[in-house]
Amino acid sequence: MTSSLFNLDGKVAVVTGSSRGIGRAIAERLAEAGASVVVSSRKPEACEPVVAAIREAGGTAHVQVCNISDRSQCQALIQSAHDTYGGLDILVCNAASNPYYGPLLEIPDAAYEKIMGNNVRSNLWLAQAAMPGMAESGGGSVIVISSIAGLQGVNNLGAYAISKSADLGLIRSLAMEGGPNNIRVNALCPGIIKTAFARALWENPDILKDVEATAPLGRIGVPDEVAGVAVMLAAPAGAFITGQHIAMDGGVTMAGRG
Image (cartoon, rainbow, N blue to C red):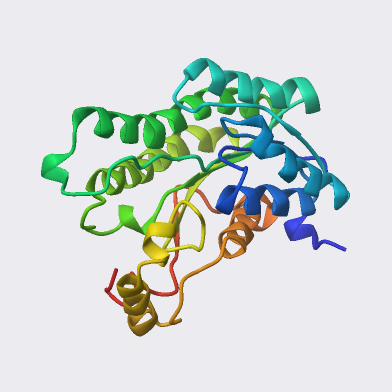
């Protein structure tokens, strides 16, 4: 039996970028806690195995395609939750892009604009579509997946780091606006997590060796270690937390290394 502090029975969640990695883990764990979940990415065929796994485990889910660079698709994603399940209680903004690896002083304008648009503006679009309905229904939880790159300087990922820093400003401002309507807005800041998105980092033996040698926990993370905290922020257990970011990095930032 799920503890009442982590019970999401009757709740409805949307998770962007939930066909794999951190997004998939969050979608599956929210469903496990009782939420009906809208699984989303650009490609429906990539989402179907996630929905199948949720249903096989006894949960409720469906697919809604969403390219987060398209405002109308972001709005349609939120509307899908209302049309299918009658409302929306939990929004997880996980989808992000990083098309450029290299010096910030050399980044092409198109790459910078794509990073900022997909990693920041889309989250605002989704919040604009979701929060009015949450306010009408008595509240909700918005969770933005940021990164420890937003908490420190990062070589070769400068624009990505800027976008993740901007997400932290976004959640604080949205938390101020949402608070009177019992809408909580928070960010999660993972370190290196073993996902396809971060493969170039955790498959780099020098980076992996440095993390293992300097992080207090001595290892990188796995998606479920992010998903568990997302469930907490979505559930009654997180009812008094808003405008905050939570680092989950094995202690890398605490130890002053990254």
